[in-house]
Length: 209
Image 1 (tube, rainbow, N blue to C red):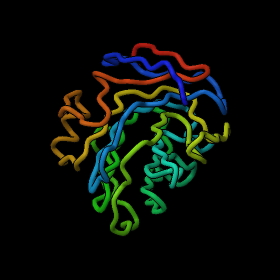
Image 2 (cartoon, rainbow, N blue to C red):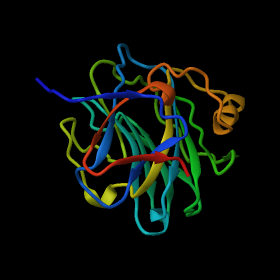
Image 3 (cartoon, rainbow, N blue to C red):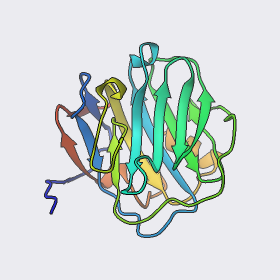
């Protein structure tokens, strides 16, 4: 049986800080999807200077059947990759090392808002489908190559991430703008104001930049 010490805290005004490249430093986020999702929204803030250097993972949800049910990944020279199950959509974006707010919306509707609400249109739409419910692993900072946890340090984030929230529906553009401005709409699965998490390896909790 897996035994872990989980923290339950209000993280408003704070961020997880990952100071260096690592294959064993990440944050596990506690959420239980009891039934398949027909739609979802994940929003988070990210600050990193790595955008000019290499790619890195921002958010990953894995199940035993699929390592990356949900994936948010920065690909150097290309932009943001938003994945659901085996489908991926590329959102072209300039390389930027300033504070960035991202939202991934799925399953059939895709959108992305970065740098103060500027919209970027994806290149293609994924097919229909639902995210699997049940026991899964949500990780911030590392892409999960397997449910049990296999990581590539060359895909790890070095920087800050915070305001991680997840809803079981698609937020409207107006709601996303409100979230960007600091508002919220009572996230059902992940709530930064009442976050259950476990920090693994070299991870610090500090005031958000």
